Image 1: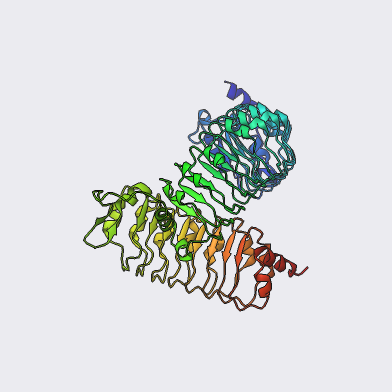
Image 2 (image 1 turned 90 degrees about the vertical axis):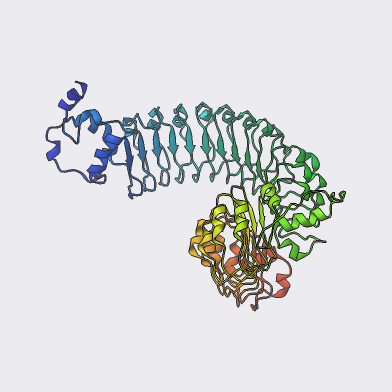
Length: 595
């Protein structure tokens, strides 16, 4: 009866009146479907404001009383999900209060510079997306949304957060990255339900102790700030598994007794020394990234990190590696490119983790193995030795230096059901990539196909979506397939000694790329503007190619820590500048950019 009563008050001539421009912006079919499903998607429609028909969609559902097959009143529902992203909306009207049942409101990628206080009346709201706008402050009314679970505010102009933020007691995700925050409210510590916090790309010079109260947080991202220290109280974050501290001003490894910490990312800081007591804290560490720092030595006590699977020491000042690294039972990836290592042959460093650990293992003084020990390798009819022990315990599939023109099926049979993370097929006579590689796609992160006879890179590689390191040096490649853009986790690719005449187009698309080695080819040019978009690119080797000129704009690639250009036929920069190192070259190039 209440629905009929409201229907009596409706404008009986409404159906005959011409609709305004605002109402025409939302197709009637969409509104009709929204009244049934409770969801309305208006993303990417170039809207400059929210049409009135959207705010009043609930009223329309109540007024359109019908017993017809298409508009039965008992099938109408209130709007619970409203998606308005990727438009040009500059404001939200106070009429947003007419949608009290909203659980999801997506306004990201618009032009909002303020929010109406009426948004605080949406007490059912659980997800609020406000990223990529122009908000300079967060209205205190947002902090009244007691059911809010996810609040995303990245890419705005926020300089502070309200102290009332601590009232959002059900919040599990908070993203305020890419803003202008210089400090955080103490009330943040009251958000006991938080599991994920992103504070990256702000202007934080310190972290408040209140973070230690967040015992359910699993991921904390503080990258790209101005941190010179990390409070020891973070050890009280008992659930913390991933801690990102890249691109800060840290001079030492944080001494954190965080019992669950599995991944610690400290790349691009100023860490100079690794100390044993700092390592002893990392009881559960699996991934330790220390690339692009100033570390001069690695302590013998690294063997304390029994759970370590990946150690990245790229681009430091390390002159020697301790043999104890080879005793780490779970270490599968060891990256030391860009260090002035002595006593280790250059060709050994290029053979990958397995060969490097084997060399270090040979330097460990141990008792000779008993002759009664069973062999660790099985010989199949192909006469190729397959190290089954290495496959099962280290996750390494090694069939290198066999001079074979194909990889035996027995090797892949031995790898079935195993968590293989590294495959090494280098120094063979392969003319194509083994199709059966795809059976390893769920786990394979490192692939070495160097020193073969490959003249093309087939689709098998493009399907290895977990791949982070790919070695294709010393082949006959001229190009890379466009589908390689699917390898969104690829961080390092080695293409030296091939037949590339241009910089592979697909590499410009891989935003995760950190290291590109393409020396000793015939590359005649690079696109500096597109290279500059690769924000993580720190190592680029273009030595011994056909570069007739170096574009000055290459100096804008400020993420580069190692740039090799020697052996090219260009005249400028002069050799005297090249020998001064990467920083001098980049500075010279920047000085040549036309005003």
